[in-house]
Image (cartoon, rainbow, N blue to C red; front, side, top):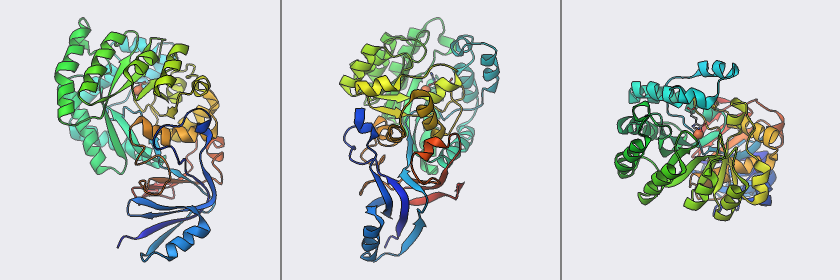
Length: 424
Ligand code: NIG
Ligand code: FE
C-alpha cells in the first residue's frame, strides 16, 4: 500500500485551480485560489486531497495507509514552478560578452561578428553527449533548488543535424535521470551557422528537409521554435519552418519581436502558435491578434534586465486579454540565471505585474505554454504532486523579499527532492 504524504497546515495554499482547459487571461490572472491554513495530501505521485486542515485530518484518519507528515506551518505552498522557455542544454559560458556589452557592444552585433549564439554553438558541437549532460545537470540542480519542477528545453546550439540530435538526446536522457521533467523543443532555426552565412535559404532547406523529419520520427521534440528577428530568420523563412514542423506534429512557438518590431506576434497568431516569446517590441495589432487567437505571451523580463533594455509591455497585454506566462530564458548569452523566483520579482518590479498575476504566469499559464495543463500547474485532486513550500507566511512576501531564495521544500511527483533548501 502506498504511503500518504500529508503537508499539514501551510499558512497559505495557493491552488491556482480551475483553469486546466484554457490559460488564465485578463482579470482571471489574479485569481489564485488562496486557502488559509490549508493542507494537501498526496498518495503516490498524485494529489488526493486539498482544503482546510480540519477536513484534511478527517480525510487522513479514514485512510488505511501510513502517513508521513510535512509541517507547512509558517510557509506558503504553491504548485511546482514551471519554466516554459529555456536553452539549458549547452556547453561553455560567455562571461566575456558581458564585459563587451558593458563597454557598448550590442547583443546582435556580437552575433553578427560570429560570437553570441554561434560561439556557444562551437562549444556545444565540440563536447560529447556525456559532457553536455554533465554540464547541464548542474544548471538543472540549481533550477530545482529554486522551486522549478518542469521546464522546456530548446535545441539550437548544434545547427547541424548531428549536433541538434545530440542536444535533443541529452535533454531526453536528462528527463529520465533528473527529478525535473524536461519538455523538448526543436530550435534548429536559432541562428544561421557560419557555413551558411552567404546562403541562409539553403540552411532553411536543410532544417525543413533533413532535420525536422528525423526529429519528428524519433519523437525528440514536441515543439518547434524559430528566432524570427531582423538579421536572423525572416517572417517567410520562419513561416516555412513552423508550417513544416506543424505538418509533422511539432507545435509552433516563436522568438518574436525581441530586438525590433518585426511582425512576429502577428505571425504567431496567423499560425495559431502555442506561444510567442519575448515580445519586447510587439506591435499593438500583433498583441490584439494574439489575444484573438489565444496565443500565450511568454515574457522574459530577466533577458531585458540582462541586456539592459526595456521589458515587454505586460500591462498592455493583460488588458488586451493575452494570457501571460513567465520564464528565465536560461541561456549563456542573454539570461544566465536559474532563478525563476528572481524573474518573478522582475516581472513585478519592471513590468508592474501583480504578485497574483506572477504566480499564475509561473504555474498554470506556464503549464499551458508547454501543453501540460492537464497534469501540472495547479494544486487540484488528481493532478501530479509537484509542489513547493516557501519560507514565507504569505504569497506577497515572495515578491517583496526580492533576489533571495525562499524555497524550503520541493516535492516532485510525490517525492521530497529538496528539504531545508538543500537537494535530498
Ligand atoms: O532567447 N534570442 C535568441 N535566443 C536566446 C539567446 C541565446 C544566446 O544568446 O545564446 C534568447 O534570448
Ligand atoms: Fe530564448
